[in-house]
Image (cartoon, rainbow over all chains, first blue to last red; front, side):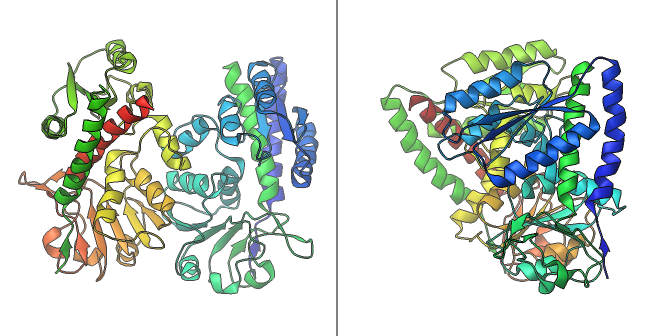
Length: 283
Length: 283
């Protein structure tokens, strides 16, 4: 039976530390503030927004929600982003994606000031992750993988980590963060041959493909740690990860459940970035 | 006995195509021009510079060499870069590295206009490589690895490529370019456990560590293709790669010799980028 790597305690530890840092900022008359841009009304985004609002309130971070209609034009979106960039009261900006296809998501992401790009969506943040430099911020879920491993005392250095999925939200940045911590990293994807054998040979497996319960018992082996980044809804409308938890949990040494795993950590990392941005501006 | 994957024919094919493109540009009164910034007198840089000058002349690309003293101050270097950025006659800039430690190499690299960053040293170019976008240019040696494989008809898609070395000049960008071509990529380095076993299991191995003949017969297996990116000088002053060619060549299916392998391709890719930059500005 595997150790369940729960996200709750990881997030709580982060929030405990953040509350103190927010308090210290308040003494300097700085009130950390996040702006959320939500275009349209995707229900998954709305759910994440509610979580962020609740957690931000607990920690003492203010949040402004900029709700834009799904048919907003490009210039109106850019004007909204620019308003956030120049507003000294705002320290971080989270823009939900995907944007409607009528918009230019890449340009919009790159318009967010790197100092406020707390979700790591712009080219400056991503270049920082790739180059191993402290520019901008790392994508929250990718960084959350490291926080999860660290909190649970799982060593990364010298370990072979197989990352399945090559998105800029998780797979690629998680690979670079793991590499910076001296893991040996294999990046796999839909064209990978012998994927199951490659996964079975790893010390740590990160699944980030967005396919409900796509990875079953045949993909894993004893002693492994499994990070399931998937946030999927199966055919019956049940929220689940990329890993078939029931089948895999008995095999491996540690595994993050979905729900209950990385989701909570991602939110905590996002709010940590907001506080970090506020602190950086005061220095 | 392995097929020797020679760089000469790859480079010649590129130069043949470039000569035609340069001729087409000349008809539009555009004369492709490269500026080289060389600080100090590192002999390896001077040797590469002579190669670039010779090849550029053959293809019809003009080259200006900006020779700066090793003790040049930061602002003088920045002024030189800015002069290149604003000079409409210049299409590409190659700045030799490493810069003396008194200079800020990162800032200098980022100052080169992405439109002229033909060696892919700035954050915009590297973000482009990481994000899979056509911004700036890929580092020449990393791109040269792909040119070498393509020219010799070696399929990349679905293959397992092990890249040893995680520099921003070769290892990381080569990994991203290979990933974009649907290879499964494992990034290894000095902290990798069981490196030899990982290397032996690959379809293609890219060695880019800068350690003379560090990889011998025990690292390779039958059927593999080996790209040796190393440009080292051994204890006897002999120029050699990262791979012990004499020991490894009988084992594998294909291998790039050093010298005679990727070096020539790197130069050709650099000049191809200069022509590309000139064409892009005319569009």
